[in-house]
Length: 89
Image (cartoon, helix red, strand yellow):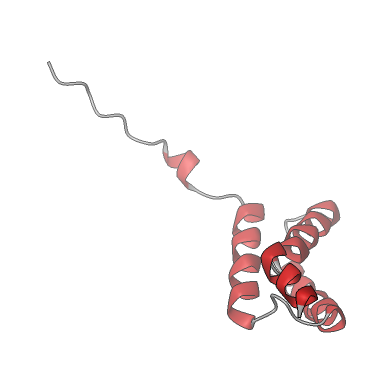
């Protein structure tokens, strides 16, 4: 006898506004070439991007935007291997 196929719940498939904002932030980081930029340029870019995201996702609270920025800044850091190679040169 075949097992019945389980269907995913519809509400589980819909991402939360926080998840959408996080995914959009990561996509923008990759598309805009922020990874490995000078820290001052990154700060300026993140300032402008967080204003954009706060307008796009007004339902998010300030702590969530702080967490998003922290995640984005970590994501935008160059890999440790690249950092070690740059220090060796």
